[in-house]
Image (cartoon, rainbow, N blue to C red):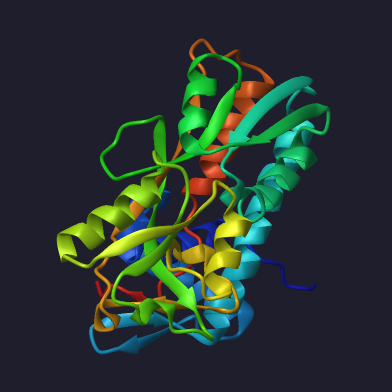
Length: 295
C-alpha cells in the first residue's frame, strides 16, 4: 500500500519550524516534547529523508525539510478549506474591504483567492486608499473593514504582524549620495513617511521631499529611475532597487505594523468570515527560520 502523509505529523512539523523549537511545538500541539520528537522520527522514516541536522546547539532544517515544509503548509491549508467549504452553510452578501494600494498586488491576491474558494457566493469589493483615509472610512461605516499600516505602538485595529521598513534606492543611480537626500514619500499622515523623516532628523541627515504620491507604483518608479530614495517595506523591494544601510549613511528604520480595522457594529456572516480569513492569512509566518533552537 502506498504511504500517505499523516496530517498530525505535518502539523507538528510546521509548529516546530514556526515556533523555533521542539518544546515550543509541544506546547502548540498539546503533546510532550518526547512525543514531538517521536513524531518527527516517524515523519523522517515516512519520507525517507532527514528533516533536521544538528549544528552545534541548534537543529537546522535540512533542504529536504524546507521542501517538505512548503507541501505541509499547503496540505494543511487545503484540508481546512475543504472542511470549511463543505461543512459550513453557504454565506452570501457583499463585504467592502479597504487596503492601501501597496498591499493590493502583493498580499491580497492569495488571500482573496483562498476566501473565494471557501465562500464563493460572497462578493468582496476592494477600495485602495491611504491608511488615514481607510481609518476614517472604516470608522464611519463606509467600509466594513480595512487593512492598514501604522507605526509601532499606535493602536489602530488588531495588529496582525510587524514588518521591517528599509531604505530603497535605484540599483543603477547614486541619488542617495546627494548631500540633501531627495525623498519619495506618500501623504503627510503616512506612517512610513513619518518614520523616514523622523529617522533622518534624528540622524541629523538633511533631506527634502522631492516626490510625493499616494500611489505605490509611482513611488517605486521614482526610486528605480533615480529620482529619489524611499522608505518602503522590505517585501516591496522590487527589481531595479537596492537596500541602503547605516554604512551608506542611512539610519535603521525599524518595523511598522499591519493591522485589521473593522467598522463599529460590523455585521456577522460574510463580514466576520472575511475578517477571520484576513487575520489568519496575515498573521501566518511567511518565511521559515533556518535555525531551530536546541532543546
